[in-house]
Image 1: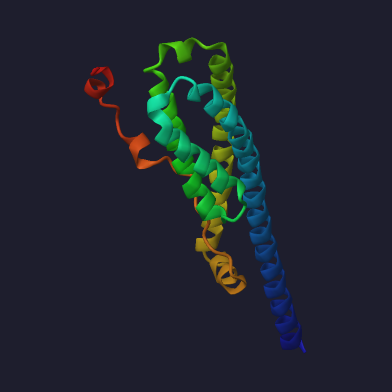
Image 2 (image 1 turned 180 degrees about the horizontal axis):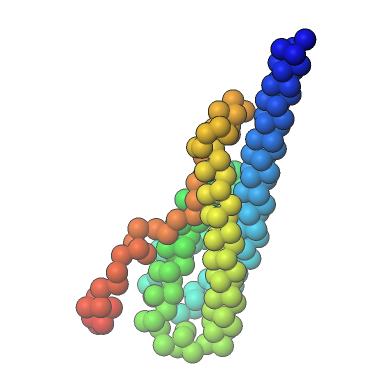
Length: 188
């Protein structure tokens, strides 16, 4: 009789551990989804600002049409809703590079830099970028927590059984990680 009680207690303990680990994984997955939704909201704000930015910049920047077209194309892809998390992360990195190219190109157009419309758009864009940066940090923190749970024992066993996979982080493009070259910045 004592061995039966011990056996039932062991099964109950294993079941409780299973439920705790499962619920923990589900909660972490939901936090990742929630954090990505927050990033998505900020991205939408930025994407909504792009047509106004392009309309304002277009009047001045005849030589930057390729960059403007790329920005419009990326915006369309982002709003199509057909990309998964990994695709959205990669697209967002490309979009950030295109936006940076526009902002660097603006330096060559003094009339544009002084335009009230552009200054207002640039202020809005800077505010959105700050909010987006905060949302990305939150997303990366909860995603790292989730990925840790996916890779650590014993939750990795259950995660594998229920099909949970590692999620990508928002990472800075390699070009932005490089130290700026002062000679290039001040050359012409």
